[in-house]
Length: 281
Image (cartoon, rainbow, N blue to C red; front, side, top):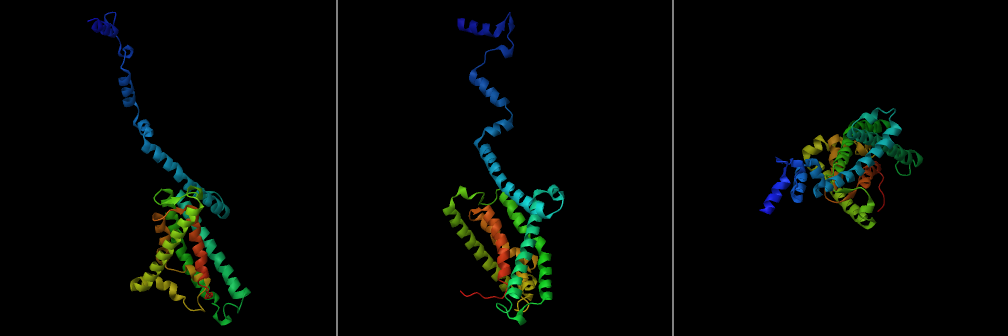
C-alpha cells in the first residue's frame, strides 16, 4: 500500500493530477517515444543502407566532376561565350564529344593525308592511286552528317557511368596497377571480339549490308579510299560498331578515363586503317 500511495503521490500535486510533462517516465519508454517522434528522414539517415547510398552518391560525383572538367577544357576553349554553361550536363557532354570528335577526325585525317600523299609521295601510295580531292570531300560530307549521332554514344555511356549502372571505377588506385592492366586486357578483348562480329554480321546479313554498311563501301578502291573514309558510315552502322565499347562496361571493371580515351583512340586508328598501306607483320 505504501508503494501504491507513493506512486499516486508522485502523480498528484495538491489534489490535482501532475501535468504529464512533470510525471516521471520510464527511460526506455522515453527513448522509444523519442524514436517514434523523430522524422522519417532522420531515421532513414541512421540506417546502414542510407549510409551506403550516400557513399555511393559521393563516389559517383567523381565521374560527374571528371566529365565537367572535360567539358570545361573543350567547350571553354572552343565555344565563345558562356551560353554552353546553361545547357544541361548531358548536352554539355554531347557537345564536347561532338566538337572533340570532329577535331580528332580532321586532325588525324589531314595529318595522315599530308604524310602519305604529299610528304612521302610515291613512297607509300603510287601517284596514280592517290584519291581525288572530290572523293575525300564526299567522304567528309558523309562523316560529318553522321558525327552528331556518333557523339550520342559516348555521351550515353558517360551518363550510365555517372548514374552508377556500369562497373567503371574512377581511379586506378582503387584496384592497383596490376589489376588495372588485367581489366584493360579483358576489356580490349571483349571490345575487339564485339567489333569483329558486329562488322561481320553487317556483311553477312544482306539487309544490314544493303541499307547500312554499303554506304561505307562506296569507297573501297585504292584511288577512292582515304583516311577520311574511316568515319564515313551510315550513322547507325557507325554506332553499332562502337556499341561493344559500352557493353564491355557492364561485363568487366574499366577505368573511366581509359574508356573515354579508347573511344577517341579508335577514331584515330580507323583513319589509319583506311589509307591503303599494308604493314608488314
